Image (cartoon, rainbow, N blue to C red; front, side, top):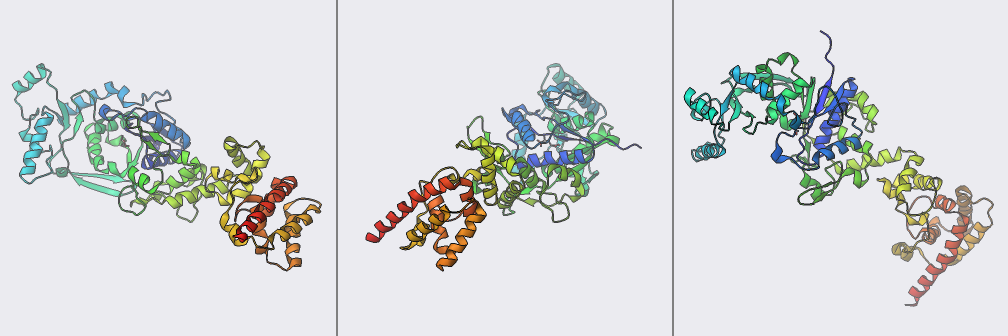
Length: 514
Ligand code: GLU
């Protein structure tokens, strides 16, 4: 038998923004597809109109784009297997519902929601809190299995609203293989007669999902663990529709857990602990509440992808930094774990820092140019990037020091109090007059001049360097001062020296007068 083409789908419901778990599912589907020369399909599962949230579909599409998860077929593309929004596929499902009813595997149910509620209430009173519509209780409900032929006909002729439910067999074992979890066995006695088609003429998730996977020729269903309990029902639907020979393989991904490992990561954890749980910023259309996004926080999309890749998967060696192409090459479902993956916000920052360091200065300078309020060229920003990149986690931090562009206004008072001494001004004056006479004003020569100066004076570096840094940057710490001096240039160095050495000395004198 020829090998089946790999076709996977990411099938989100547009009920809000995609959180990290959702986009990780998309990523694993994408990696699996690309690794196996397959197709990555985006299907919007919007059959439940009551949960539809405006803007959510656009958000999903934008988030996939930001992460560079290119969709081969989806709502924005024209392909023979579309449309890719379930609300536009309404007419596709009825035929299969009829088939299931005809073969005796589904039935009409007329029970109104108040009646179902009443049954649940009665069961609760009888200390059976988990009432289900199932192979036993269905016998006392209003459905096409219990109502007489005449009663049924009269209801149909009056167009009485009814749903269609799957007829769960009694005491049968359903077995299926999960690519991550191995064999799964569930007894149908633990399953209920789920509604597969609603009174409003729309299929429910279960039916639409299975029918569409079939019609779209999906080879592998890779989705979150929360769908594992639904999988036995899906397997039954494949069986009853006679599609078992083309049933996709299943892989249920582990949960993403809170940083302390205590339960599933939620939006509230992000708010509470100060990290985003969404790829992009999201404004709730109703409450107008804004939730932060990785993009807006300054994460590179490649870091975000790298972070997600490691939430459930690992390459089996110590390599941690991956580009998308490397992930495609290395990814396999065998290396996806069963147990939940703890999210570590500090590690997430580390990933971004590492990706930042791996970027060339020219790449970084183009990013800086967009946000730089000073009129300096690309070349200058490249040099700032070189000096700052070891100290930055996010690219906007490369521009966090104004002293690269102008003399400072605020200064570090602690350093001043600790380091400016009565002999500082004379040391500073002498050092700058030596600097005045050097031939080429570059970091190396400046450093050599500095070293020989402190040696001759028999002082420690700490007696002079912090004072120079204060004068030139206003700070107590930072990247190599000699490199900063080379970058801002001789004229600027001398100007700051003239202005700021007097400023600090006066301050010192004022203080000692007190
Ligand atoms: N619509 C489901 C969701 O929102 C898809 C589950 C699946 O992939 O089968 O996650």
